[in-house]
Image (cartoon, rainbow, N blue to C red; front, side, top):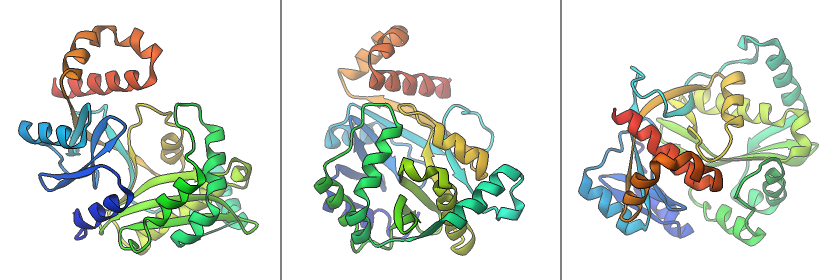
Length: 296
């Protein structure tokens, strides 16, 4: 893992007041009621039982998810990260339609890194309008909370990059990325203003970021995250179609605190019915189903 890992990232999360703990040398973070590893997707985050219990207690989670690194044999085909290892120049893109959209996007838009102060000042409208395109339980935070979250990265340029795509001088989309040395660049937060998508702003942003991280910096791979079980997969499908992203398969396991462990085991046969009533319950049942399939 990268030299600043885990200390620099823990400093950032402390500044943001985000629940996180170092367990067995790796960072685990709380998202909702789920505890998940934070770091390069290729790493092994397997934990012994006593550390699982300690992480759940210290972070107050109901369920903890672990992964055990990329597996070339694909013995765990249902869980994967969506990554890209190689930058593809426009003239090497196989689809003429994608080549055309890339050229138009780069002609219509400017892509560059942006200081956190600039993003904090100009990014909220893009952030808020991005929610217009999604259906789900998430809602935008208040402007003050958005600004504070971005400004917390000030002084952390060694581990966090902010990128913006501009159309006619206006911010049309942005990406906030975590950088793990020369191992991985994680595209953590991606937001696009829907009014500018017809100018192919998303094509321009992904093309330029991939070029920078994969060709210019020589980072091992860029990562759009693990398989989504709560939200749609439209973005991951888009990246696989147009930017040579691939599924990097990994093993997975899930552990629960009491009484959640008993509840999941007892209600699992009724997961289809219960999942129709609650999206987050549906996601937990799907996680458990995939974990059981991996163990088998």
